[in-house]
Length: 282
Image 1 (cartoon, rainbow, N blue to C red):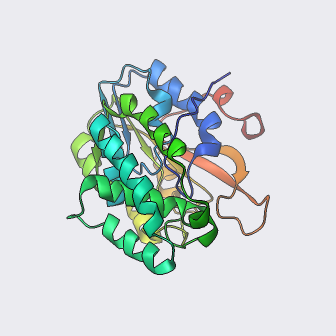
Image 2: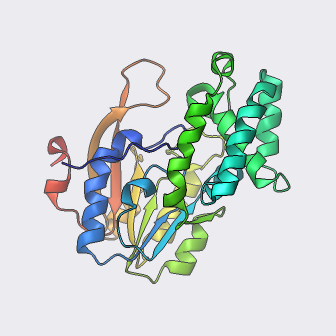
Image 3: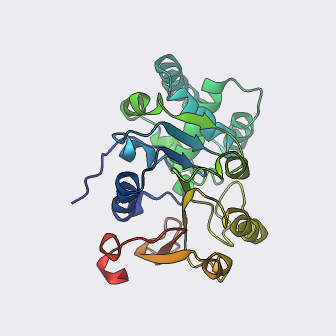
């Protein structure tokens, strides 16, 4: 039985929280059996996975996120002083964001390169908490009226001992395939926005998915690519020796109707033993 550490993570739409129980056995198998020394999470988002692999002796850990505010948040969590300042600012600034106009302004400010890191991180937490389904796009008045408790913010300190040994970056995923593509002792997790999805603040077009498949196909790194039904976009990987595995159905994070589900898949450039997959997918 694989235990999950219930550690405070950043709220984000499309997060893989519901898949942790299915993914962790696979990640642990790779770390224990394949001589992996480095781990790259290149669409880091809410940072669901790094806290779960904290105990593994990996020499190199990278969390990368394209959203500047989220990257600043994770950078702050690598430092006790910055984390305390971020928590203080988050609690204070939340009371100034009570309308769609306030929300849009905060969303703009948190992504500016000149915004101080702790303020950018604080505004990022507020924007996620005060939006619908944590989409960071649509203001939710009810969430703003409810507010963010200081107690919930303090839980972010649980991540500091974990993130101190993680390299946090704000780049595109391509950079790392150029830099580490020759490393067969690295595991790379790719969890891009879903194909043809419009629920994300930063889009990832169909063409970008096609280009990604061609860019990663021959890498020496071990790769796990996450997604739903790709409508054939990743067939190029299968044609070139990759594997596709079903992880079963999970509830849609942005479902219009309660209980709506979608099938999740992973594509890998290495075989996964069937006993690590959910029973209904074997």
